[in-house]
Length: 194
Ligand code: 6PG
Ligand code: NI
Image (cartoon, rainbow, N blue to C red; front, side, top):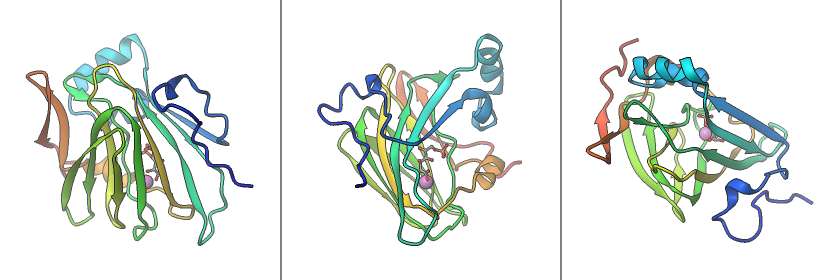
């Protein structure tokens, strides 16, 4: 029997539950995605002290076959590098024509989306909200809470794969930063520059 990995009961204490229902676990630290942040001086200062964990991804292990689905839960912790909130690395799917569904279990933030052609979209993402990521759209999640972990469930075709290179090279068109104590969506000054 395939068991969905959502722990039973309240979604409010998910941070405290070991998601041992999942076979895969990836931890992403600042050093792995440091080049994605706008303020490199602020990032360097943080890295001199520590290499914080930005998020943990727990996922099912399914064969990369047509018709199979991968699903799991991401825990994106609160924090900022300079004025830019903690975020996921962000990716296109290697098979570009594959979609994904995200369901927010806890917290608040945004999903940032781009196409290879340079179209851009930003969607608010908070507890109870479901986002459909259409085929062709790269996706990144940003946690804008000062103190709460953003927790979301995701499901996508098991053979989709990940393409991180284009985003690593040009970034997303929009950044989510704190301005006057609130989240603001701004143009990425470095988009396409590298
Ligand atoms: C996927 C999902 C999701 C995502 C994580 C971490 O396609 O695998 O979008 O599981 O991978 O939330 O985001 P990054 O893969 O961009 O680091
Ligand atoms: Ni994805």
